[in-house]
Length: 220
Ligand SMILES: [Zn+2]
Image (cartoon, rainbow, N blue to C red):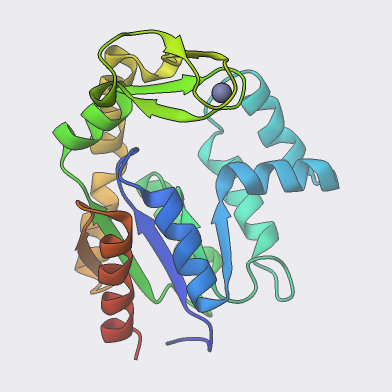
């Protein structure tokens, strides 16, 4: 390991449970969990140039361009900055270009391990396209557990609906984008001996145990 605290990257399709597992891994190792969305918001609040630029794109509903994403990451990587020590990166890098830039930015203290949290496409498709969310309290349901399409939230009585970006077409588009943009990163890290694949199917606790086991084996 390059530092006393691990530097991990978690890759996986949307709906693979990457966000939840990243947070658990970060807590387990006492390092920070970084989702680029959170980091953009933090830096925008602090008024950094890249942070404000990123916010403009997000507010407009656009993808933040690579050079701005990398700028935000780079500003966070300085010693003593939020990414100066160990971390779990969640949702970054998203493209091969970003992966290369990340290597350049952290050349002195590289990534220790990249985990591909593998959940087959048809399973994540069902998870996301079947998701229904309460408009009031954001509680998440799944249609497999309910026969009807729209219903009232058990918690707050709010309307439970499908989000616009959870429709089958939208999910299909995002999964295709992932195959096109992110799968090449898997090969990139595999070629450098940094990649390990973890089966992401099953109860969250079991998946987490698999992740920790892999980290124990690889981070020595
Ligand atoms: Zn509710």
